[in-house]
Length: 140
Length: 161
Image 1 (tube, rainbow over the protein chains, first blue to last red):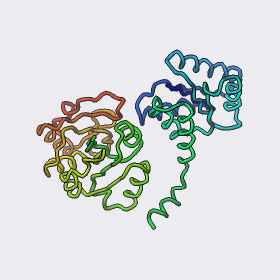
Image 2: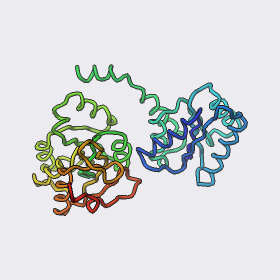
Image 3: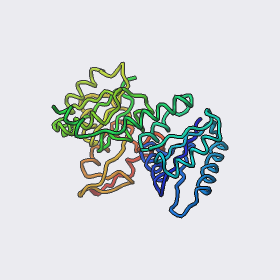
Image 4: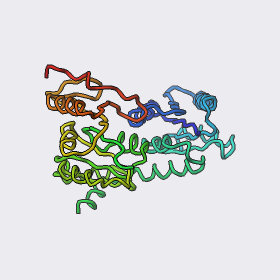
């Protein structure tokens, strides 16, 4: 199964995990890493690597890293991890939101790693909806 | 297939139902059995929008829902039937709909209700309906999401309401 690490500024990653638990119950092989305001990026990288190792010990064969913002510190650190690894080993997606984490968690074992990554990208794109526009369409 | 889950959840279609139960049970239909929502176009539209595109959502008044279920309309599909209150579930039972198990999800606190466990508050009417469902061999259990353990609920109902 694929392990998931959410990496984000402040408390966001941990709270996304809590929100997922509220909707789906406890999800296996899902970890959160937060970047504190006074934390060094070397330290953040080490924390991600520790989470990665922990997930591998738990049985994860590949790692999906979901980070908050492309171009931010978290994604810059994650980019370094991508450069240092094989393509089938780790993927990093930016712009994490709750539907993406849910999609990544559901039926994870039924998908090839690459298909899982595609499915999570689609879920994230689809999740942004202008409610007024959709309602106007439906209620017309 | 058929109806895979009868559930009381005052939020009706939301994340726990669509993602938690829906994906777990691999359903393709949700029947919302509620007079209130059936009469409220915005609420109905929101319910329909909240489900994934491959899940068909229907909102019916309890009477229409009973007729549909008694025709075994979901025989070839996999469905979740949602109620806002246990009284609506009891109504279906009284209309001869076969309900073997009733899942209790959220019944949130409102003034006049008493909290008996996290996410479950009941008033006199809820108690009466839940007792009667149980007495008529419907297995009533609390379980928020599939990954949680089902919990017996009837013994927790207050007897002084």
